[in-house]
Length: 554
Ligand code: ADP
Ligand code: MG
Image 1 (cartoon, rainbow, N blue to C red):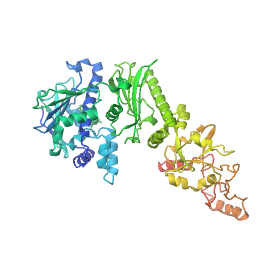
Image 2 (cartoon, helix red, strand yellow):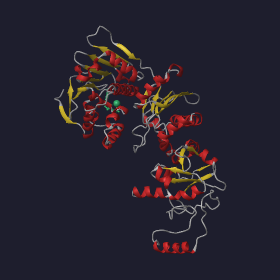
Image 3 (cartoon, rainbow, N blue to C red):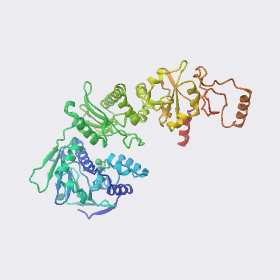
Image 4 (tube, helix red, strand yellow):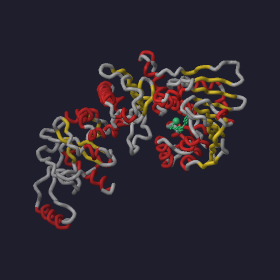
């Protein structure tokens, strides 16, 4: 037992809390989902640690989450018998911003100029701190599994918090008790009716059973969620709503899944897969670490969400894989190198791509929506995943110089090739409209040759790896003396005559004047209305790539 020590919140936490407290965001219900998900995580962590140290379970092996409501006192308590926290754990996790998702949220918030932040809370889980949306004071008491030491954490969310070692008698036998002293306008969260409704809607499928008890009520403690793992149920027993709830709790997203993939692989390896493609872009999509979030379970025990089950270019896919063959007592590091995991990685990745293929063919509108959100990420696979490049090229969609803003596949492109056209032409840049206006495109337009407009950063990379489609290489419109002369001008376009004397003397003049800056000046077929344009030489880098590398100081 120690005197409470006072600490200041990390600057980012203070900012976040300020937002939370002053939030006019109406859907405050989300705090409960966050606390329940922490409690469930804690139970799953314990289950995992108990594989190598079964004594951690003591005489209480059944995980549970209990919500205790006290209308009189205006409190709601979320208690779990999970792994628990020591005083040191609390110092590290409740006062800092631990998870990268929350960091991404903060970055968005800082960049946010139009008060969009209020809405962002709703689309984005902000973890433990969301308790302060409904509570003026939050107390946490916890005992780490396998220890006799208990600790407490308290805060009013206004800048500081205190941590103390406390008498274990006031703590749960194991796990964590979070008490929320509800604000006046949030007292409804001490009522069974409200809480039960929210739990069923938001957390009905967390893999730990949830109970509600109401202080001073006749009624017994009641179970509101059964803790059965949704993915082990038969598809026919699962409603779309069930999937959506589960998606929100496993993905930490607040939208709906755009695609749900639930199946069981049998044969050499047995595993269940329940994955989702979100309807909107997750906030951490372009985090520098480009990590995925697929959870790995072994026979319903959560093992890790760092197994990188999917390649990075599928990092927007959320959900889990539950293996029946991996040994439970294998360390996370060894799992990483296991051939069983490689088989799973391969199987799931292939299945997701073939599912996308199917939708692309049978439900093009639905596929377009997925491509709009995640196309830029999928294209990373074009240079990272040689084996699946052809398949990814088949999935790719492009806006082109002739598509009027519509998405076109390479199959569409190939079908409208001009006679004698030997390459697939593309133009890169940072802005679709500007690329479309580029003088580099004039000669192509005049000949009715379609040009892919590539506005994403990743486009400057995959186009350099020597990919081809249908035997046709990709060729930048900025690169070299693209030979367009074999392709006739479309009717109505003025032909380029042989260079007159004036032009020839201008070229000599330009060569002299720009001697140090360019390697050549020549007459070109590629322009129709503009007088000049800059091109890269055939063997050199694409212009946009050169600009990007220069900007990155390369
Ligand atoms: P996240 O859950 O994404 O890590 P949170 O803000 O929800 O972010 O929680 C921060 C951290 O606090 C957790 O990662 C965990 O270490 C700790 N924590 C929160 N609630 C509990 C709990 N009930 N039991 C054990 N640890 C917890
Ligand atoms: Mg959490």
